[in-house]
Image (spheres, helix red, strand yellow):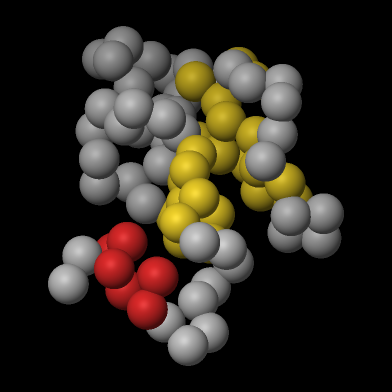
Length: 77
């Protein structure tokens, strides 16, 4: 069973899954049922001073991606 199958079949799926495994994800965010999945991806700049990261506002259930320390998608989840 893969992650998507597990989330779709879970009796109580989590609202958020954080991942760092996929180096070049197609999207930084996606939904699987009611679960939001986030992956900052690998920074293609080997000399980057700051790794890719996602800032999460768990109170408002929003997420913001950063690449090289710069916000890359002003639209949030």
